[in-house]
Image (cartoon, rainbow, N blue to C red; front, side, top):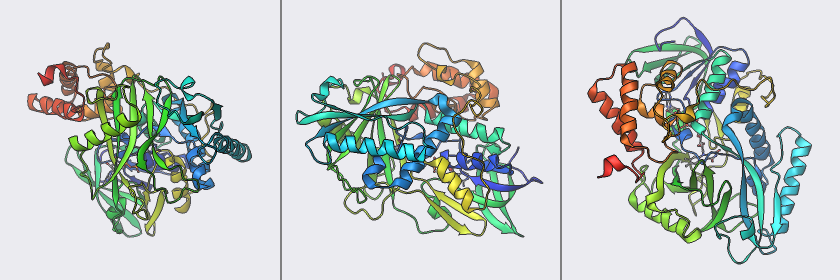
Amino acid sequence: MKASDSEIVYDLLVVGGGIQGAWLALEAARTGRKVALLERDDFGAGTSANSLKVLHGGLRYLQHGNLKRIRESRRSVKAFRAVAGDWIEEVPFFLETKGSGVRGPWAMRGAFGLFGLLSRIWGDGGKGPQGRVFSGDPTRQVPGGVFSPSANGVARWNEAVMRNSERIVFEVVRAAERCGADCLNYCEVSAIAKVSERWAARVVDRRTGESGTVLANQVVEATGPRVEEEVGNEALSLLRGVNLVFQGTPFGTQAVGLESRDASHDLDALVKRGNRLLFFVPRGDQTMVGTWYDRLEDASAEVTENDLERWLEEIHSVAPDLGFHRRNLRYIHSGLLPADERNELSAQPAKESAILPVTAGRFAVRTVKFTTAPEMARATLEKMGFELAPRLAPTKQTEPPPPPYPWEDLLRSDVDVDPKVLEVAVREEKVVHLDDALLRRSNVALDDFCGEEKFILAATRLGAMLGWDETRRSSEVTRVLDRLRWSKVRPSVEQ
Ligand SMILES: Cc1cc2nc3c(=O)[nH]c(=O)nc-3n(C[C@H](O)[C@H](O)[C@H](O)COP(=O)(O)OP(=O)(O)OC[C@H]3O[C@@H](n4cnc5c(N)ncnc54)[C@H](O)[C@@H]3O)c2cc1C
């Protein structure tokens, strides 16, 4: 489909192809209605490409006594497994226990017990977190010697971690397409107006510059952190959320939560833990560390060397001598999030996603977690009057077909740039930029820097398919190198 005037009147137009828009399109298309999803860049290129990759099972919301959110998280993780199970793995998380109060081993045992009970009562969230508390010397459970001498045990539970969250956005979009949705990337909605009982969206195809109109009976905007402003509401304060990605996995295949020196001011916590937790999550040969939040009033959207110095120092104070150095930094995930505006003491992200009615037949969604996008989509559509299909569950019948190509192989240090991969990216996923092909459809941001030559070769191959001249090829390579600028291992660039 082209973004030009068309005869079709959609039942629903979804604006914004991050994880939230993708799930809205899938759940709406599953009802048998005619759905269009329009994304101005590439699918998942916004905040959704910048997460710690944890699909939260809901354990953390026990400290807020927020049962609704726990259930929402558990149902959502199950839906993710149904659509993109191959891209999700169980990772054991470890946290030290201290004393005999709320941070002690018995409090954690109580939490795991309660969580298990809720899972059994609800019966719809899949397996529980399988939590256990080990008493005694924590260093016997986790390598690295990072737990404090005053710790009296270790709590362990499992979380679902996305091996590649960007690929998961594509899997949800592909599933929506299989249910009949028309999903277009690089198509920007520049205006929405009511024209005789219908919504008319002005759409600009950013590949060709052509514009056209898409008609729909209802519209939902899932345009990310600035959605409030975009629909004319008062702008929310925003935070910059950042994770650092380092080469190496000093904790092996396990994730570790360590108390940072900064106090936590979580207004909703019934059980206050004291200091903020910094998580170290393995992903392939690398470790993601985060998440840091800063108000946009106090920090620029771009990460600076000063920010980096501050975070490296903080990591060093909790996990010294484990290789989390500047020279091992490979990538920085940085994205904007709505802030918890009630909290004046510390920068905290808003806790709840929200459905924002704009006017009859037009809604918007503010999303605060990747994890809960499936349930948020269902709640929004229900409010819009859709009769929903039963919830997706990871059974044999709903297992997704394998992806069109083993994307993970692309640009691994030992694998040449395979033209077939680029062909599929262009043909099936309508890629128009080299960074869209390499950074969201491959593990290049995950791998150790593999050298500029490979990017030049990939640009030559992609350029041959897309008709690029020399200037365009070199600007595309520059875009990729810029995105990977934090990686210090750049043999052919740095000398
Ligand atoms: C550092 C960091 C770590 C995080 N870690 C986690 C985690 O571990 N687990 C978790 O559950 N959550 C995590 N989150 C939160 C999560 O990433 C976000 O809540 C989620 O990705 C938001 O998705 P979204 O679809 O609402 O927004 P986005 O991904 O920003 O998508 C909105 C899309 O709308 C498009 N758009 C905007 N305007 C238009 C227009 N006019 N026309 C067409 N398209 C338009 C944009 O291009 C964009 O692609 C983290 C966030 C950050 C920043």
